[in-house]
Image (tube, rainbow, N blue to C red; front, side, top):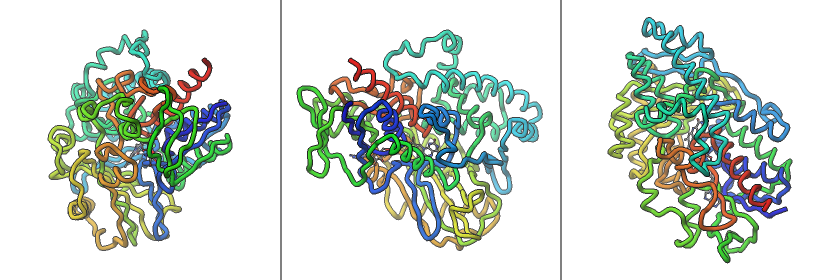
Length: 487
Ligand SMILES: Cc1cc2nc3c(=O)[nH]c(=O)nc-3n(C[C@H](O)[C@H](O)[C@H](O)COP(=O)(O)OP(=O)(O)OC[C@H]3O[C@@H](n4cnc5c(N)ncnc54)[C@H](O)[C@@H]3O)c2cc1C
């Protein structure tokens, strides 16, 4: 039995904690904030409940597989509902496409936009399903230790798709710009431009159209609470308000943490805090990656978020609503190529109270608004307000209704908060993007190459951004620790 200290209480840390406790270790989680969940924290205000980070529950099979490893099911911890419609995408005033809950219905929606497109969509989805079976059922569960992990008979047949992009693949079949935007949308979760994301990642399209969008009752935070309950059942101790200030290393081995000026001895340190930050807790010669290394990486976007209480029901929107009524390419360039505040931002709005009565008072609406941004921009209160007014004006015009005057409160969260609350590199929201050169063994490693007994997990390492990958990342790191423990 080893003493294992885990830094952070995001999905990846909590998942790793469960596996390590199940293996018989003495596991303690140290979280700097006063609540757990990391980027998936919850905000409660005046009878409203908001998920502060993830709102899209995709890949339900990954959650099932996680709980199944402990002889449990998601329904032992939270209630899931498949959303119908899954989401709506606006392209202009009263101009939108609704994505429903089955491929058959989605094919009808495509056909309405462009005759013949449903046949192309089915072909595209067959490929996406094939990729899903290879990637999510197998490849992502490999720890990124060696390039050989990617070499299988099935991946060799797909090699061309690693060197083409989602953007090229979609455009080779579809010409309608609205359908192109909808098919390029899922890979935005991976944090890079569709034109910089390998075509193989079309498995995200299968997650979207093939598996569908789910909502855990009371929000994504109920999943955090479920995993916390599981962890505690397995004997994990979770401590909040514990800011780790230093990782102590003796004779090349991590053997203690400094928290609130106290030294806490441990056998193994596992960090689910952002990778860059974790390495700053070490003396410089013990860090594996230089500042220059991080500066050259493609980070997933940051975001400007608003959590808004409205004192009336909002019309003409669904639980998830995307506003793609402006130039997708221009906003992408403002995130990735020439980082700046976007002139006309795309944005996403979630109204969980459309389907979940528990998250707002009766007759009212909880609204979450997200504008993706380049990490590292200047974040000042005046700009946040300017952008709130900008998107409210667009929202009112596009959906043809007044909403701004029904705002009873709004809370914002942006780059500076990501840095202060999560020690996020440049205030990134979703970690390190999944580009070709940042996939699998090319990502920062789960195990330190310089310090023994020091491990990493989470969205900056393997396999990448998102809640399902965070659960997988926790499992992978726990597996490496267990393997090392055996020798
Ligand atoms: C706005 C937003 C929307 C998103 N939407 C979705 C979505 O819809 N669907 C989806 O699947 N994914 C989504 N994601 C991504 C998903 O939330 C993340 O990939 C995942 O939650 C990351 O988990 P993690 O464990 O890697 O890191 P985190 O959740 O960041 O956990 C790291 C933890 O470490 C703690 N920590 C940092 N430094 C220290 C220290 N020195 N001492 C102690 N603790 C420390 C932090 O406080 C934090 O709790 C979204 C993310 C954001 C931000």
